Structure formats: C-alpha cells, structure tokens
Length: 243
Image 1 (cartoon, rainbow, N blue to C red):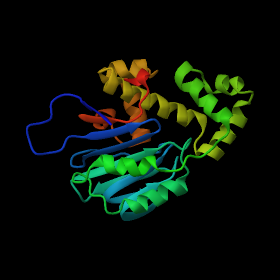
Image 2 (image 1 turned 120 degrees about the horizontal axis):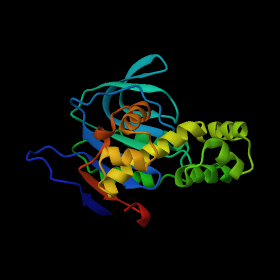
Image 3 (image 1 turned 90 degrees about the vertical axis):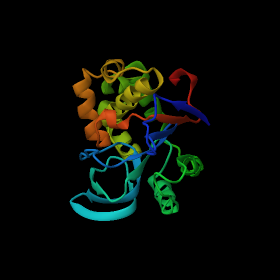
C-alpha cells in the first residue's frame, strides 16, 4: 500500500488526518475537537467509528459504531472521543447489509490508536454486488464526460424519470445527488493528487466556485471541504490517472 505525505506533520504527538483510499471505498481518521458538523446526506453507505451522539429522522441516540445507509439524512451532534473514523462505501459495489455486518466487527477499533489500514483490509473483503449496468454507464458519463442527467439517461436508452427511478431503487439516491457527490470526490482528488487549492479544485471538478463546493461538501459530507483534506494518504489500487 503506497503512502503519500502531503505537507509537514505538526510538531506534536497528535496524529494528522489520515485517509486510506481505493476505488469506491474510503476510510478517514481525524481529530474531532473544533470540527463544525452539519446535517448531511451522502449517496453512499457510511460507518462512523467513535462514540457519538447522532440524529436520524428525528431520533436522537448514542453509538460506539454507527452504520447509515445511502441517502439517509443524519447529523453527528457531538463526539465523546478525541478521534473518529468515517468510512464510505459506494452503493455501486456494496449492499448496506454487508456494511452493517462490517460495522459490528469494528466495535473494538479505537480511532487515533489502531492502524486504519487494518480496518481497510476488513473493508476490502466485503462481497461485491451487481447492479444494472446502465446505471454504471450513466454515472461514468456524468463523472467523466460531464453529461447532464437527461443526456446520461439518453446515452443508456432511458428516460430521465426512468433513470431516476432505477438509480434511487438500486443505488439509494437519485442521479443529481450522485452527480454532486462525484464532483465533490473529484474536487478532493484534485487537491490530494494534483496539489490544487480548493478554488482550483472546485473549477476543475465542475463547481461554479469555491462557495458552491463548500455548500455541497456541507450538504453531503457534513463538513467543509478543508476539513476533509488529509495530511497522510495511503493508496490501494488507485488508477494511475488519479495520481
């Protein structure tokens, strides 16, 4: 697993923000103190590791490990530990039931102490799912060719409404939310691999400006984009075109 160090580590004993990255799977560990959290709704499945208080669909609870299905609005209200981990699993590859079982296995993981790469090894052993290939082709066209939803639907011989129905049913979220998520992950990739600043990354990923990127990051990931940028990145099976 290749390691990238992105700038100097602060002169302290604190572990910097760390990201373990592979196609359609990402794990991040970061400090929790002072990080503003917003209500979020990512189109991917999420596991949060670290004692937290949360709100989902009006229900407030506490958890040591929290698994949230794709496109479910939720808020992380506070953390009771100095570090927390967030893991994102693309619904194109993973069923939520598999992600839930993985969350149960992670109950003994201690963020900030245990090696995130060990958790990543568990994540890579999840079984892969099959979805309608037309959905995959449409999302590829949206991400890599910049097509709009109606154009992507036409590319795979579907109406916009039918594409929206199928994608919501099989992948948990409609095409427009997926498009926003793909732009967000592209922007983060530009900052990590191309060393672009957030303004440059926003334009390269198709956002109108950095403010648009910030709004999208808060809505989907629950934090400002700067909070997502790691100091240390471990890469596994990342295509050469992203390096």
